[in-house]
Each structure stands twice: as C-alpha cells, then as structure tokens.
Length: 152
Image (cartoon, rainbow, N blue to C red; front, side, top):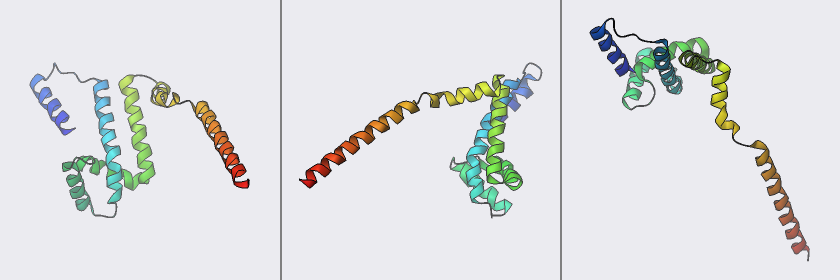
C-alpha cells in the first residue's frame, strides 16, 4: 500500500494536470486496504491490553514478518476496536469493503452478493442429502447382517 501511494504521489508531482485519478481506482485501493485491515484485526485484538507504543511496535514486527497490516493498520484498527469492539469492527470493515466494491464496480449490492455466493450455490445440497441417506441405509443393512451372523 505505501508503495502505491508513493507512486501516485510522484506521478501527480511530475504530471500535475494530466494525471486524473478515477473513483474506481480509489475505491479499489481502499478495498484492498480494508482487506489489510481485516487481516490485521485479529492480531490487533490479541494485544488489546498493551499500551499504544507497545501495540505499534508489535504491529511493526508483524509488518516486517509480512503478517498483518503493519503500523498504519494498527493505527486504524485500534480506534475501531475501542469504538465497536471485535465483532463490530469486523462488521464495519466488511461493510466498508462492500461499499468500496459497489463504488468500484458501479453495480448494486445485490449483484455483488449474488456473484460472491455463486460458487457456493454449485454445491448441490439435495444430492448430498440423498447420498447421506444411501450411506445410512447401507450402514443399517450391514449392521443387521452382523447381528444375524452373531445370533447364529
């Protein structure tokens, strides 16, 4: 993320008027950043009892080890955790990702959610239930045969 920000800054300084940043690009960048926040939230929640300077140092170490989102994510996640708690922070970040996806794709939330759910719809639940019934029936038949052989 910082690399992209630096490149945009340099390009804006060099090309002053010819560089136009679109809403779609900004939305995609913020959606990616929100994903980083989401990934860092579990680490940030682990060291909730520490002081701010210790939290920043821990976030720095995580960022160096390519875990979590680093210092910037910690500076955003810390207030979120204080304001909303863990579950509220997850809800807030996921909803912000959805908003940024709506802005980037210019499609309604319904279409985006249907697209995200589509791979899970391919799993045929009825077929799995039927297979489960068949497995139960074969198990019951085998058990009855074992009982018959034990009696005789």
